[in-house]
Image (cartoon, rainbow, N blue to C red):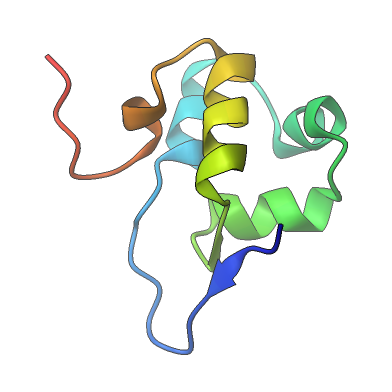
Length: 77
């Protein structure tokens, strides 16, 4: 599956970078876990591209968080 990109100013759609920092993990580690290129994960972390929903669920599973915790604007209480 491909990642979604836009030509407009990137919004902070995902919180992937924040969650990685909270867990003392690096993008390189996540890329290795997913079998993805480190540059792809870097684009996700900087919100210049977004992972597919399927990939977001896989990332959440690896990080042991709910998928909603990886998205801005989702309040899970």
